[in-house]
Image (cartoon, rainbow, N blue to C red; front, side, top):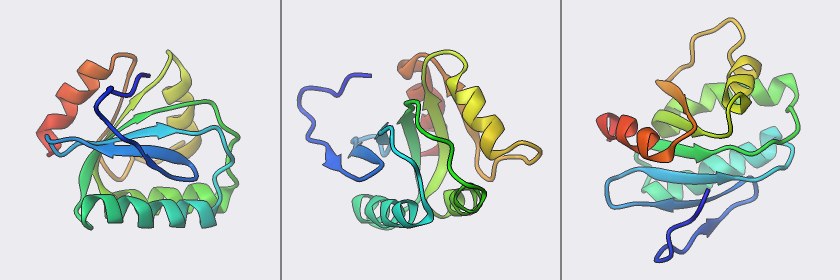
Length: 129
């Protein structure tokens, strides 16, 4: 989970970001409890970074506390408003756990895929730029 040397991260409460020249937004997740309030603030930050355009997201996941049901519902509802697709990069098993928490019996509202390799994640996301 390394940040390229020539990149300055845009700092957020639940994640830090950078937007590359291919149109992919990179997110470096932080290990804090998500709430409706900090997710709302984060969505505003993402819209500011992307110029209010839906973009593919490559997110580097970290272990963080499981949010309450209202926050999980809100987060799921907001995904299609800001992202075209999401590639989750993590150690094996973590993204599967997060998918199970968020989308137990439902299909995700945008294309989502788990990766342990960020080059593969980036390649997959390019179709959603």
